[in-house]
Image (cartoon, rainbow, N blue to C red; front, side):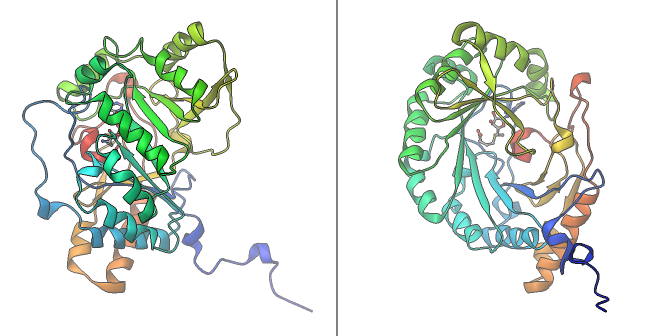
Length: 350
Ligand code: SAM
């Protein structure tokens, strides 16, 4: 008689490799890596014009350190990675970082979130380096609104960047617009209209107050619910039909206008929170695992990276990451106007 347990009872060799579950049974397998806290824009809801202090270069994780964090992450089951900031294209070694991460066995998906200003030059090198996806942040198609809301933004430059990304083969192009009362809330219709002709995903994001200060105050005052944004779009462009959910952890709820090639998405952390399906962990540019975008809890990883080397360094980072996953909180207090105190979006990586 064969006493072996049935295959379904057998423990996989490395339990964590396929399933880093947190204490709420969420499968956390997506790491967003912030490369830098500086940005070449000063969006009204994100960065004040004065009083900013950026991390000195020595405090930023190096390309080699980021690669080792990714190696540690795949060893415990992470599969999806995204580079963000601040503005990640301000890192002179961005292409090298992409090359390094693409070579890590287990990095199945690698994306970039950018404001697009430097994409005209960088799209092809990034594609050649192995980047898979690009999300571009663009709040309006009106150059005057871009200048007012994204301060220092230049619509033509971003638009050329988006077209360069498309020409380099990135698909689908995803555009992210943060809807802000008194700035772009009426322009959501023009943005959504883009999907009629183009196979792009245009996603509308609700404002969140992060980090206290003037940007957090503005984010509360100028908040527009995606319920209102959807209504505004449908009033002009007709009904949006909801698309089937293909990825349970997608933060966007996706829709299509009749006859459209592209997709209209709504990311609604305030009016329709999605903490229950969150699969994300964040790494800040100065080497902390930031456990939840809307909370301050962090675990330092830079010390472990800088005090160790080789396999020992990777296993030390992996064990910090597993503890970070276990301690990942759920829920937020956005409706009471509270979230992080210590860090703003540009310091965490949106
Ligand atoms: N620089 C890149 C960019 O512009 O996309 C990456 C970093 S940026 C912090 C990531 C995203 O966060 C952008 O889409 C930005 O609009 C969004 N964001 C910044 N502050 C926000 C806030 N208070 N509420 C909602 N989204 C915000």
